[in-house]
Image (cartoon, rainbow, N blue to C red; front, side):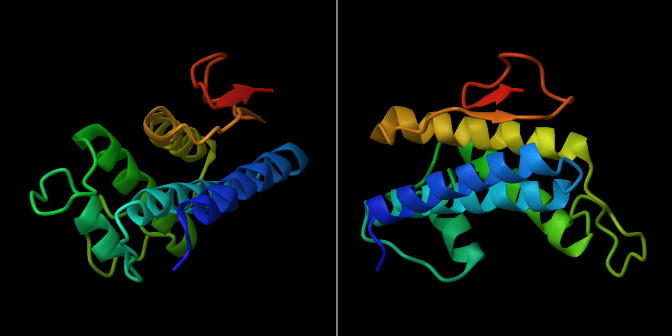
Length: 161
């Protein structure tokens, strides 16, 4: 089982990769959103490792983190849990061209990922990093990001280029 520190190291590597791809090629928003989700996934897996929990399925992770799950010792506050699930949905949109909010099974409309989706992903990830950095002192340094959809100094962990 990966340890807390292993997951935090991978999350930091993912953030460095996000910064690198964002600075070199700005139009790959789908990949940037996906990296945001996998960064969050490693941060929550570090949190779960503190409780000796490890899951292979996203639905099991979601159940363990769910603020309404009274039996889980690893549940998150509602705002952070919703940020994580929103980030997961944005990543699914990026990877599979679907919009889970659409609700239409078998929809033929492809849902592409744009800069506005990257901004949403950054906001959700910022909320999660802030929560876990405050709780565990994980030492996440801000990275510079090019995204016209975020305001200067809007996010603590993402500085506008």
